[in-house]
Image 1 (cartoon, helix red, strand yellow):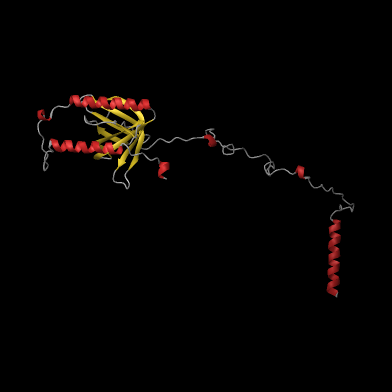
Image 2 (cartoon, rainbow, N blue to C red):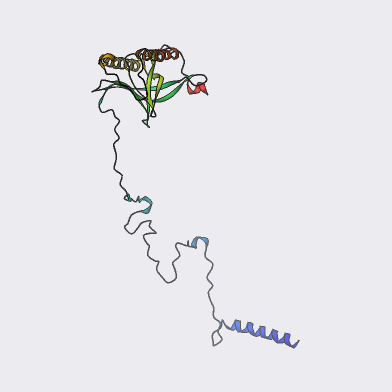
Length: 267
């Protein structure tokens, strides 16, 4: 019990000391003003609060999104010089010695006889050209695909070649060639070309027939030219050549009435 009473006394004495802390040494009470709590409108944002010690720190270039040179980082496009400089190389089209008889936009098809069933397959869309060589007077058909400029037709026009209308369409022609160069491979092909207008189709036909006449007039008789023999091969007789040409022409006659199915029809 004695301990408990002593504790109470101590607590009381402590309270008395606390109450006396608001008095002056002479015993007079001191009135202290209590500052009211700040309203929500008066609360400053963290960016507005000044650091302890006085003035705000100076702004850096990073705060303004600018580098040391005063260039805005958000709109700065750095330029770095390449380690290796590659010069531009002009690739010749190998047409510099040829005269352009015609150049018309068209769509080219090839006849795939090995398909089941046989059908026309699109080879490409681009500019169809008829070119005459200024020195040799040879004439060829050349066509490159749009954008990629990949060759999709490249063969010479021969005196016995003939354009035939495709299924009576005045804007499309069919013809055959014994040797078309495509992807480093030469093989016989039967082509169909379709133009956007009858006028363009007639221009191509006129240039094709003109080239055929140029080749026919420039061709010398076989008797005037010396015979050339290849190693391990025998020359083909004139009869065999005529037979091969007739077979190619017959193919063109047969496929001239085969319709070209569109991609929508195939699907």
